[in-house]
Length: 174
Image 1 (cartoon, rainbow, N blue to C red):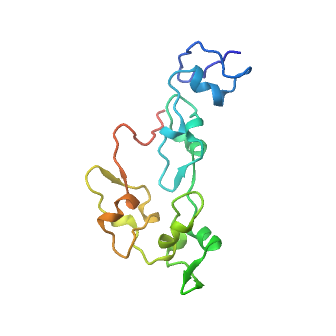
Image 2: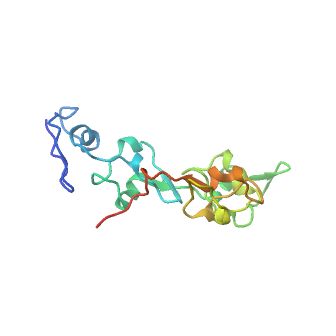
Image 3: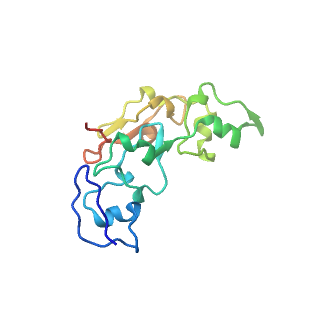
């Protein structure tokens, strides 16, 4: 079986047959058509993380764009999920979330034990953090926190992302 490559924008067919006996766009697009981007090349908005299997999920067109956000990304969980699953603890007893933590987000689409300091602690938001050269402040920095009441240079990976001119956030060109 052969595959009809999507045509917006035009793709170049390599002339190969599909991997299986029938073509499957999700599996065969990269195999049969040149230039198709996967979700691994898409930069999710700050409140989201990449979905599982991003290297095997293809964007709608040859370049990923804002149209691919739902396909490539999922929301980071709110700290309220951390409170439900694990609970903020103090001296062996469950306590309330830190003030304002209900609007903070965990590091991934599900909260884990490593999110405790950011959901339960009295920590500063990244909002006013100054990233060093070669780094950019994350989108929605108020949902990210430093490791203490005052941000320090050690908080750079929490508050900033490495500026990479070859891996820019997707832009939807119309």
